[in-house]
Image 1 (tube, rainbow, N blue to C red):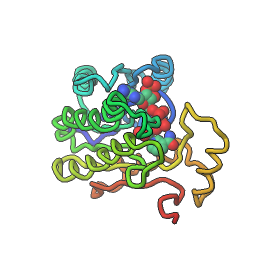
Image 2: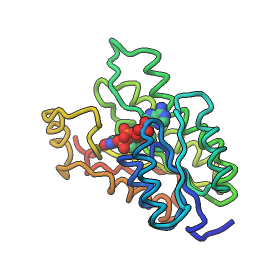
Image 3: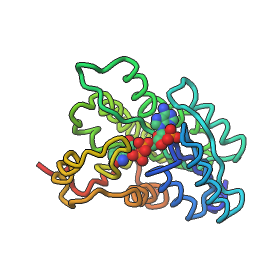
Length: 248
Ligand SMILES: NC(=O)c1ccc[n+]([C@@H]2O[C@H](COP(=O)([O-])OP(=O)(O)OC[C@H]3O[C@@H](n4cnc5c(N)ncnc54)[C@H](OP(=O)(O)O)[C@@H]3O)[C@@H](O)[C@H]2O)c1
């Protein structure tokens, strides 16, 4: 066991771009070795990996996995442990997000949204737990304020994130005292890649007391608190939403 951050290994799912890449960059900056998981974004994942290895040689590795496949998460953890030999931090960040109106939602939508947002995080945590336990490590889930107050037309995603939030609380109990489990709940952090409707964005901004989206760095900063801040915090989900969840 080592408390030297340079020997610590962090696995970040969905790490090629956006919030995942920001978290990866921050963890690397404080000295962790990083395991960069991606599904389709191989070019951006490899570019991030190369950039981090330029800063410190052999400090970043990439892993491909589609987490909607059964057992893919467990296989991912096995590969990371085989290559990087230890695990201290698990960031469950990968997530699918799209509308599923009740009139047209399908069981395939259910399987896909629950796989990335609930099933994979849980089974990755299960597979990672022995290694995390050895190093008194931690897990941080990227939740969503919509886990508490649903986003219209997105029932399946919101239900899956509600399960993700309950995972944080359940596993904080069950994995204590060796592994801390926390969550960070973004409000509007970055606009979804598949949405550019200006009117919809303006509507969301009107409901945010701080009047702007968070940006990936603010979410990463909250994740870093959960990893490197107080080691007495577990089972907590921190909303990073510019005050949106306290709005009437
Ligand atoms: N953006 C926001 O404002 C916001 C708001 C609330 C909550 N959040 C949460 O914060 C986290 C990061 O948000 P984001 O907007 O940066 O996420 P994102 O870009 O929508 O997705 C992150 C990555 O998840 C991966 N992914 C999706 N489905 C997958 C699957 N079945 N198997 C493996 N990987 C899969 C994708 O990897 P590839 O590109 O490699 O395919 C994608 O790049 C998510 O958990 C999200 O729910 C974000």
